[in-house]
Image 1 (cartoon, rainbow, N blue to C red):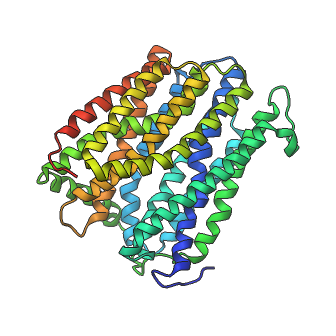
Image 2 (cartoon, rainbow, N blue to C red):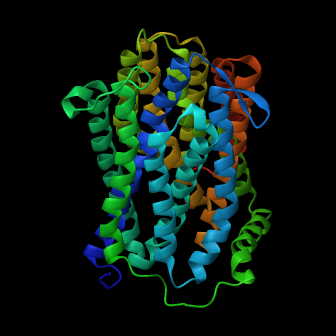
Image 3 (cartoon, rainbow, N blue to C red):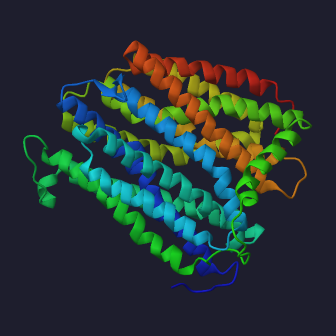
Length: 440
């Protein structure tokens, strides 16, 4: 059941933005905070660091890097397919629900994540990631359907804000559960202590939260566009054809092509750092105890989230004064310093300081990169295809970054060498940005 509202209706806009409140808990609790801590503690308690996987002996953190890379590779491949379907299918909401429920149920399934059933456990993590990113394809494609051009910036920002608030609320609740499980009547065993049990329950809360709050969005969102044509092979391939069309146009826009090259290189490193930061903190920092580690890591994630808000504001002021490209060069320089510093970080206080600087440049580089790309687009009505190209570029960069990070971790047995290697991408990014002639 749903209610049909006119495009631009305030209630419809709020319902669309509310999906950010529903799904952002995945990116914070599962991808960034609680699950990486849980994963590390499983291996730590089992006193193993290497495990047999598909006939190979793989380091625990490298394994997660490879699984994440494979998930993003799948998402990068299916995104154009999904975009084609989203453009032509008359049941866009059905696809949004499909990926939402896939991701949410996979999160609930993580309650049973166990080294004894590693293949099934990793498959659940994989489906959670694909469900989250797959649902975003359809969620984002709804924006021009529900909002007029003059409304899109503000409602998109509102969605981001709601997602931030909702995810932080649930993370704080999960942190309380992990730190004080007795208050929530959570008991454990010698094999599965109360704190670890609380983390398992937090995965369930993510799935339930995601499904429950998305219902408000589904109630008001239209079924999809009025085109109810059958999805054909031509439609499936249309997304790839659009990407090829953008690629051909890039040959005639030198500045945009150079910028995309720079973005591809430095974004590869940025996204990799953001995906592995908690695993690095759990493995490489001397916390003293599991409780101190859990509190310290989740506290660091919250610190990054809070500082990121100030960082985004500061970045926007710097770009207004110095221009986008010069600001991006400066931010990349800070990222390079962070990676070099991270190699020497061993104590919790050093990790907090590093996390603070990560927060300062994390949100800023993402928002400024996207707005710079938008400003450099040629005169075209086909902005959706250009941004689809941008998103696929970013995801392929993540795949390469995670594979390289995991490979170095596997070869040298330490994530510190992987982080120091990422410095190279920021330096190359700076060099490529200096070649971008257009000033902003």
